[in-house]
Image (cartoon, rainbow, N blue to C red; front, side, top):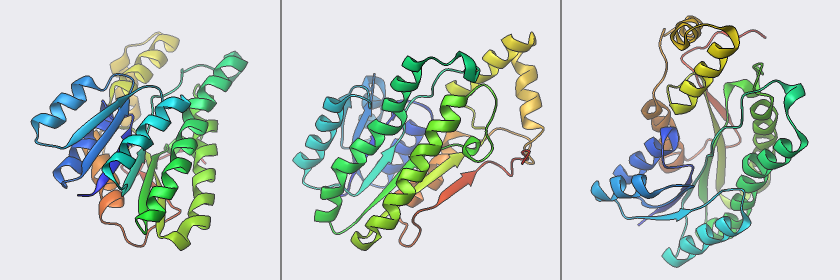
Length: 250
C-alpha cells in the first residue's frame, strides 16, 4: 500500500487532499495541531490513517511524522501545508513574528522534506507538493509574511527539484487563488473591519476579479494536488496556479 504524509490536514484544502488520497487507497499519516476530528472522519471512510498532532515548526513533530512513515516501511507522497500568518501591514510585523512564522512556513516544511528524502530514495522515487499562493508572484497588501515566506519556500523547493530529479523525486507547488475556506473568512473579516464595510462586500468585490465569478472550493484544489501526488510522472519544479483565471495587477 502506498503511503502519504500530509501536514495541515485537519481542515480546508489539507483535509480535502487527505480525503482524495484516502479514496485513492493511500495509507495516510496526517498532521495538524488538532487532528482528532479529521482522523475520525477519515477512519469512517475506511481509510488507513494515523495522526501525529503538533506544530510543523517543532523539530520533534517532524521526527515523529518520519518515524511513523518508517514504521509503515515506505513513503510515496508528501503534502506540505500549514496555517496562515496574521493579516497586518509590513511595518507592524515584529521580529518575533518573522522568526516564528519562518519556522512554521519555511524551516518546518523544509526540515520535514529533508528528512523524507531518504525514504523516497529507498523507494526509488516520490512525489512532493507544497501549498503556495498566487500572491507569491503578485504580492497582496496586508499579508507580507505570507508573500515573503511562501516565496522563500517556492524557491527552496524548486532548487530541490533540480537537485533530486536524478532520484525520481518530483517536487511541485500549487498556488491557489481565492478559495473559500475558514482562512478566507478571516481574510474578508479583517479587510472589512479595516474599511468599515461588511465582509460580504469584500467577498463580492473579490469575485469580480475572477473570470469564473466565484470562489474556488477546497475540493477543486485537492483534485490538482491529488493528481500531482498520485499520478504525475513528468511534472517537476513547477508552481501551478489554480485561480479561476484571476485578474491581477502586474
